[in-house]
Length: 335
Image (cartoon, rainbow, N blue to C red; front, side, top):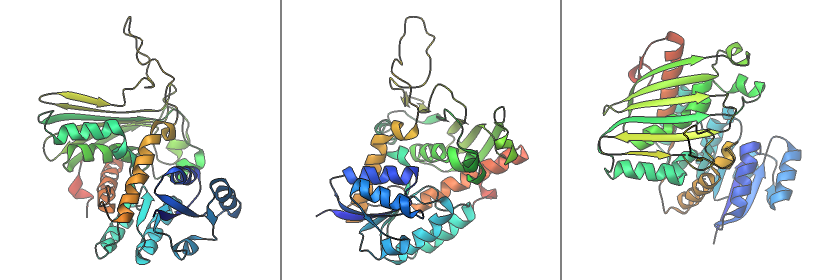
């Protein structure tokens, strides 16, 4: 018998998750809600889900697990409410709007056995998984450099920029999570630089439209994270791992949004990736499939709230580094 899942928040990613869940064989039913009743009704009708008034109604409906895709400020209270109700939780990143609030949530969760999974989908992309397996298996020898790239084709809406918390807390966190997961060690020092050459909306909110962050790991590995809101050719997300014995790359498929100028070489020759949901469709599906295993008790959470908190601390260190123009030790921000 499959599971009945609740989905709270039916914006872009929430509706996408509802679509994915409706297609998973382990899902028997869906209960959905959004603060906009018309959206709730429309999504419920489209996917044959049960529409309810609010999150409390979802928790009271008897669901086996809940997917939280509401706005970031609602994450922390919804996670804790679900856990208090004994319902396994999948929540989109981040745990909370601030790292300090995320810390408080993680502290609360220490006394609970209810599993919580945070949505860092790149951990489920086949090539990224293979890259981590190569590291864990020792194929690359000792690691010296890891490069993670996330380049957006166009900036997000102005209202999103105003509420995002900045480049490092919104975009770079995906890179911070994946390099930490692949390297398998903690970051000790962060140095970030950023610039603005595009729309003034970023500078107006103390943000940047392009950033590079250097991470030093406790084992000596160096991480380089590159991000921008202006990559007109498409959505570019790649991971390079260089070790003493070998090097591997993830994200170099036929749709990689780069123009190769090497004479006689056509690769990559497919239409460039344009949107993160298209680029990571299989990863999102695998991520929610893993959550069904968490609900069933057959697997632990593959990305815990504690994992997400470490990523939040890195983002805080990068934000501090950018504003102070200096390297920041993780001990300065981590509690």
